[in-house]
Image 1: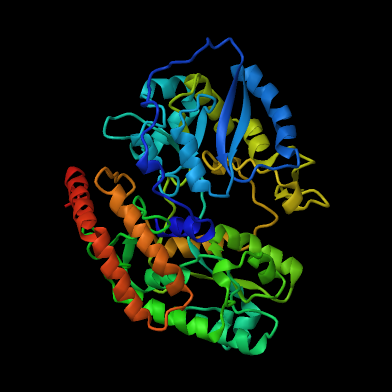
Image 2: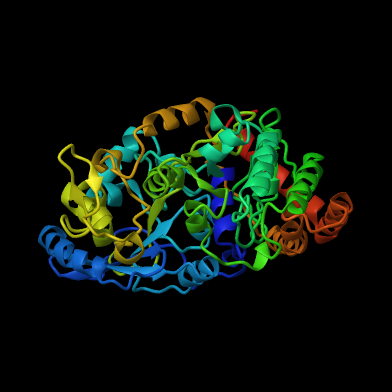
Length: 523
């Protein structure tokens, strides 16, 4: 989905084609296949995304969690971190290595190449029996929602377990200061259109001399893609990336015809012209592409008029800004709110797979079933040790202990592949109007229409890689308004995309989309 694809490439970036270019050392396996009987103690290692904490917090948590796992399923848990530096490449290399020391793998079909890695044999092929026997609570919960079909390849096997019982919104947009927006003349201090953003940035530039209107660091194509989402009915096909970019779209009006707002739309030219206008206005620093400062801290400190990320981050920023600058206030301009082109998170935005080369796949499922469905285990893994990592307030809200500093004290287990609404607690850090925000979003949002669409990329990978190289030459410069003539630059980019094989790739994608739609009796 657009918001998810945007999240990863805007914040982190990397080489998405790495997994597709290599064949795994081992094919997917199925059955029970454990190397030892269930009465023998084993260690289960779970791969997670994120920088490995150095504060010892998660190790202390494991000292509490592992005796429970030992008692219940004769297993202990350890974590293997794929860190954010070059994370996509490192993630795919790890999965391609055939490492038998990894048992559980955090995956997703929209940002962690879940389908590609399943097709290439990174994940254990599961049938109903192994899930019913070893992860019965997970089986029943997912089955009750009819969501196992979201996790199957055409062979009928199940390759991961969806995080389908956790409510979140990761649609992106700009955060901005409500007090400054009122001063800029925006009604109720709210930006409702792209023109409102220009008005706001202009006011900040003219009236807040110490602040950039939007201090942004590195590649961040939201001046383009954010505009496109709000000014077309484009639906990004999130299963297809070209380097750091997601070039193929359908439209809500014609959901079974493939196109590309990068390669074809007139709106890209409009977006690039606005980006140039913002650049000339001085919305961002001249060297934004090479800047690596903490722009969120600058926003909270009054040195930036805006920030960019998703709604979950926005919830926390509302509270943080109230603590730092009580009279400021924070609002959010969601990409797509102008035309209600916003999508709900897909149910495989987070998912957990068993590694194909795990020596103990059945035991790994038993551990996962506890982490997901046993409240004591869930709280330990997600929140840590009560009194040290978190506290429960008298009104049953989750809070941090006195003196807690998230930059130093964070648990960092990053369990994004099995969170459950029933075990979550309201957080002190969340605003009182969280439910209203979610309701507003849900009123605008649509379901992503291609959750079960899988592509055979055998004939696409080299072309997508070549297209990614073209995008990397042009998009970063377009997004910051660096071309003297953005329309001419876009024409050049599109010519090079055709040379890279765009038209042939489009035909192949169209053929596969047609087959999927026909097989699912959608047209």
